[in-house]
Amino acid sequence: MASENLLMGMVTAAITLSSSAVALYVRLELEKTKSAIITHINTAYVRKETCILRERSMRELLEGHKSDTMLGRKGHGKEETDVV
Image (cartoon, rainbow, N blue to C red; front, top):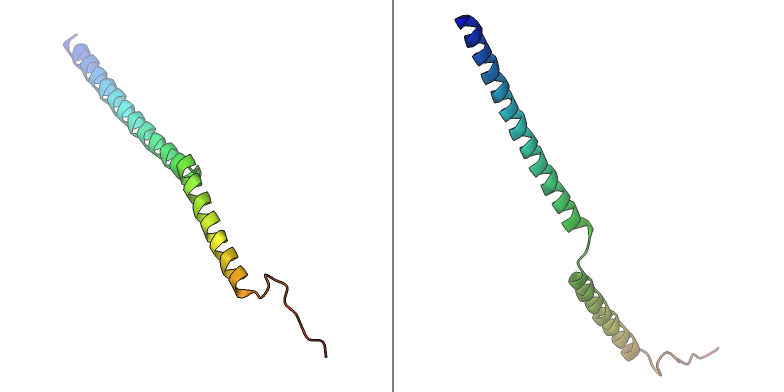
């Protein structure tokens, strides 16, 4: 009877330890998955403020090129050519 109780106690301890290890493993895997999802969202999608800044910068860049191009032309694109 005493050996059965000892055996039962050892089995219970092993199962408890195993359950704790599985629970810890599941928690760690959930944390990794959560981190991966957050990283994916932060890198895959662009925030509205970032889009506004990019659009503003692109407009300024295009306006700068437009101004440079217009300054370099005679008569704003109506150059005369001599025909020989």
